[in-house]
Image (cartoon, rainbow, N blue to C red; front, side, top):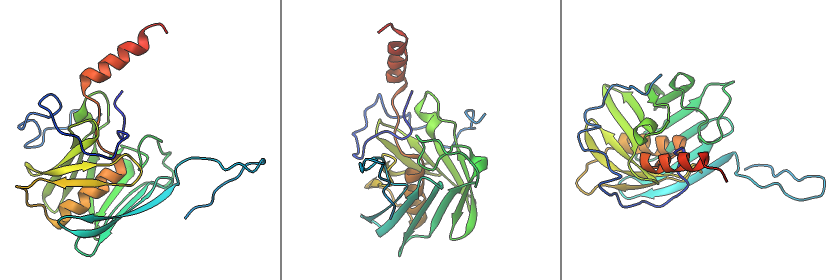
Length: 222
């Protein structure tokens, strides 16, 4: 099964095999997939290992300067701030049990709230199944639409209204990297949403053929 998110933090070169057909995602299709922290020591004094529930990273974006991405995987909250971008917040509903392989804890859009400078936006993650497209996340705000969709094992592309803006990479630890396309003209809102979605859901997914091989391998006797 494709991982959500893919465990890597470096951008990978797209191949024809990995990339989507340019017309497949533009315009957006109908969503047919929708159906500072205390370390705890044990009795022997050994420190338990594991990711911190809250992480905060500051990145120097080539186009928009310093941005801070804060991820609280325990509560299911993501916040993106910066002097040159709007404040974007995403959180899961209180009482929703979080899934460990999803940084924000759920892909159920009904259990998620997304705001831009305090104003509600609509977030609609696909279910995340076999294909890369099933890991897409769609956003609608101010009569515009965005999509973050995997197009390689580590990375996902950000698209706004048919315009391919750039490639995001995040391994689910709150660290986000972006490579804007040279011919693209991203806006501050594009950046804030892209960083928030990448941090909340991770990026990338295995191609279907690789997933199929792994599934067959799991069925073979050891």
